[in-house]
Length: 498
Ligand code: AMP
Image 1 (cartoon, rainbow, N blue to C red):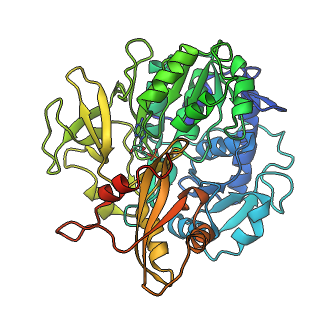
Image 2: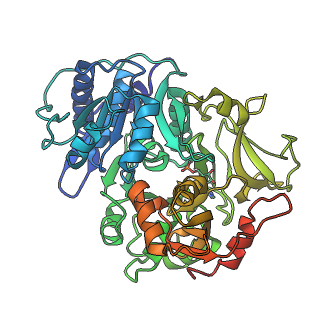
């Protein structure tokens, strides 16, 4: 693999007339992809972006955002997608840490972002902004992809940190390409496939798992701006594959017009980013005849395991390791455990990231000497090789498929006047899988309310991190070492949303 990911993706389909991406109103072929990514690439170059420079994007989902991603790959820049919900305070941290040469944002945020001391050149994707990247770019010649070594960075994706500080996961061309090749193979993607794309594109799932796999197969996408059950049910008859988080599937099941007939053209429904309940799997099969294919991955590693396309899709498991990926279960001390024993999942392979951006010590802590990455997920591997995830060693809430590290929310709440301390936990929620809940101890005479705490969180944090409820207690339960027993809180308040 001596060429860039872009060169491989582009080589997969040379026919410019082949359809690539459709929205309700626009259609783009592979020829458009080539032209637009070249034109944006040239613009970025003209702005001084060179190989290895970061290009940050906080933009609404659009075809242009996909072309921007591909333009970055094409010129060897490092693409840094940011959740559209991030507040200015959160962005300031990312920009200060990653030092992007260019920031691309929506016109409504342009002046606010430009006002951040950490911001470099700020541009927009559509024609309305002061510095639009795509104005009049339809024409222009070819732009040869910049040669990239397998180990060169292709993307930087921030994951919330257990310490409250987000870490930038450095993903290389090899990481992304090896994963796309493996997924195309095991999920049987071919040029006749049509992916119903309703995921956000600032996350591994919607960006790499979905788009890279489609591109490598020369397939097509129906590109919805967001998950909306009406739009999904309307588009399904034209699709062959859907990728979603479990919440999407429970929301579809809540609709009477989601039927076997609506799913008649579908080849496979794929789920990941959070655990799929066995009840959802069973209800989905009863309704549509489809057994949802569950897979497991993370930002740092791309996809690690998947249930088989042909063969048994076993509910409650995340299937078998991908080709080329090694997975093992280890004790806290790193000692490998036998099949059937529960421990921490560790993974090694071409999919595993290069490390955390500018955090060599943190990176070293999360890898074993023999190169295995410690995922922090608690799992077990059966005698037949199927992997099940039974919990998390890392203190993490996954709400609607998005990760929230409690520490970040707790630090904010603990700073509020009137708060003694807090514990943020995930509680079972019928729609989100888990809902962020804050358990708070107040000073005896303080009157800070749930609404005030929620408003304070909303002012500083992206919406998906904001607690859906605040529960006031006299004291937090602690073990003999003084550690807050979040498991006790999760049991005590487990029925809050049910
Ligand atoms: P992210 O980095 O946002 O992709 O989140 C990765 C984390 O999501 C993993 O470490 C797991 O804790 C969780 N996850 C992803 N897929 C699954 C799955 N199929 N079942 C259970 N947890 C999952």
